[in-house]
Image 1 (cartoon, rainbow, N blue to C red):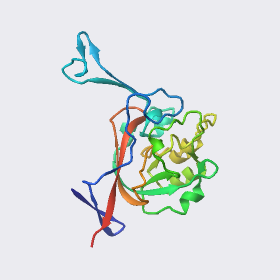
Image 2 (cartoon, helix red, strand yellow):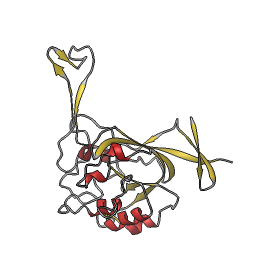
Image 3 (cartoon, rainbow, N blue to C red):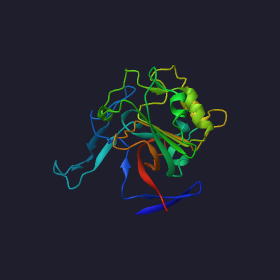
Image 4 (cartoon, one colour):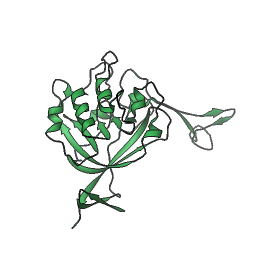
Length: 246
């Protein structure tokens, strides 16, 4: 299936039958990335009386309870409700699921991604930005970040992206802010312009994984979440290659 797009006067298309998934699969147990000391996800059969939701254990169907915390276990998308006093949910605020995105690869400087390193690669035509940190290794699928001071983004970069009206920021680190910053959350606040004029429709997606086979460039992004009325949801961002039509 092909979708046609008009991008600044250029006719481009995307083949929706060729998705490039940049989410991290979520498993039960320890075979996930983990951050902030949050417990591992747990998937277990539902039990009620003599019923057990496991065919393997003699049940008629598989029916599992899922115990997860989106912020520490895998790819998740969050809204300004993550830092606001008001109850604002990702299901209320993310209403448009396709956008033009740029994937860039950036090497951290002194453990952070800087405005300078991103600005020189930035394309003005985009609505969403996907940042892949270097080196990019498969261990990101199961990396234990807790207590290890993972890479973060400098607030100046997030302020710059806010001014450029980037609606969706996607990163392969557990947070745009340092693991421990005394609750300042300066990068989150800068990106969402909170509390001055909160960008309600802007999102941050953390703990993605963009395989090296996906080259830097401009893509169509499909950002999907579960319809959860909370500040964040497990999510599945998918990229599609774009082609200029004759």
